[in-house]
Image 1 (cartoon, rainbow, N blue to C red):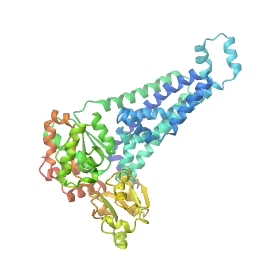
Image 2: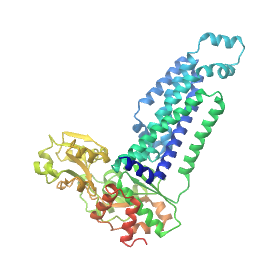
Image 3: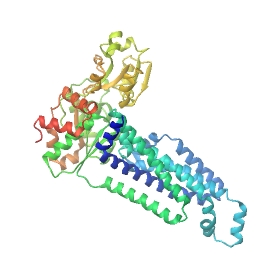
Length: 508
């Protein structure tokens, strides 16, 4: 374990440093914004008890909103990336800072205030010379609490493409790399302790003004660095969903584009988030390309002109229908698809299938009262998923929602018996699972293809030509093998992608 830990640190030191800087930048900017809002507000409202109590209740309500829900609510308003993460973290930090500042000021001994009046001090002098110094320990305590809270919650920023140490944790979970997950979590904890320690140093310092200026400068520097890095004009930004396969696909795209145009500036954003996050990011212009699947287009992204059950489509018909609807409804272009289909599948351990005679999806009706299913949240809510099963009379009694990267672990540990999978998952072979034949026509065809704005296609014909070289390429067996090399073999997606392109003669 220790050797794996050291090896991970060595191999990923560049990623670790980038994630650490991103995390620190987001955390410090959020903390600075929260202090700038909460402290003046508490000072202004300290003589107005009723108004202060109302604001305190509002900040309490904000604290009760689950962080992931808050991020989700912000996406339609401000999009994906750093901005919604900054807003959410700032809102979470308001309560401890406002509450401690207000209490620190309101609990000052009345005799002190009488003395201020007797000495003829102005309101500003009273605050600056007497009241704020007295309340400062309480204020500092609130800021320290907020700093720890922000540092821990900032790991969720990775789910909306804001980067940070959460991206390492998600990657570690997906790759079953406990060392990487531990490193991401440990660095987040150490960062919280470090920032809290700096604030404590400020509290003990006799030169508080100078140290405060230094901390503000540090926050501004990291925030500016993060902003500059995230706002650098890049020619092409390619993002991928969570998992090894999207990671391989975006590396294939990058290398094809750079082979066609060595001057192209291509930036990858792996593990960017779920389908809806990527789709929103593409529509808002935050990313330029991401790999999407034809079945997902029809089931989740576009509005169909006819009821979903009214028509069964071939792979070619699914692609053409999805392509046309994307163009009509969103002005998006879906390029030519690859050969393999990464369709949804329902899988059970081979021993379980043999015991209960499970060969096809309709056989689940025999065990629906007792089988324990572990489905991803997205699958449970899709017409080609949990809803589709129920519509066909298969109402599974015991269903747990599981994160995609954890469902195989839960299956291996015997906690569940049935999972939703992708047909190209390497774990199907690794864990000796049986994919149930789709005799109910539950799943539409799923072929992968690059998705981008039509305006981007018109402006970059060389990109379209380069990516279309993948059309009709990659068999299901080849995709399974590449996934296996990344997930079990620990190889880098970029190396696996390069090997495939060289073998096919697509790059030199």
